[in-house]
Image (cartoon, rainbow, N blue to C red):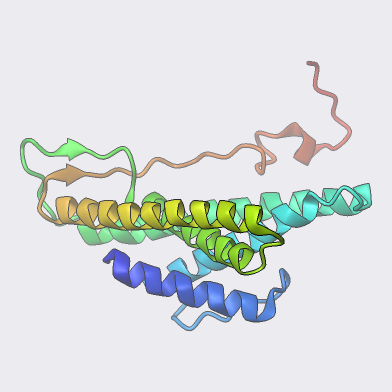
Length: 204
């Protein structure tokens, strides 16, 4: 999958999300949910939702109990994001399994799905920087937003090119990719005693 296709999916997802801007809204996925495109659309939707939750929790006037609920929701969102990325990688690895690496193939430090994860977040940053630029309160904020937007757009171009090169190298056998599971512990009752027993006390 080329970065041009990824960019379109992310733009469509962001546009759909902010037509409603509702963190509780179910994902109106235009693709089959278990398809590669569907998972990538879902991944970006989760990112948009988590972005807004992260903003909401930083409201210092918010009641503490409500802030805690938001924090738990952010944790759930982050776990869902990680699970979706790893599912995307599994589809890629299944697709790549017949490719024979060249003898001098190098090992990539990043999988395709985690590179796509970075591209997804970058699109959201660009969307919000565009919004800030269009609603700048004064010249200083306008110029600051304009400067940051240009940097983000350069990063978008660079990352898109890097993702295309990664796929080219994989298909031509010049690069080997392996999945490295995140193994998050804070959401797992087997590893986080607070989830299994909220009364537990952990010595510092």
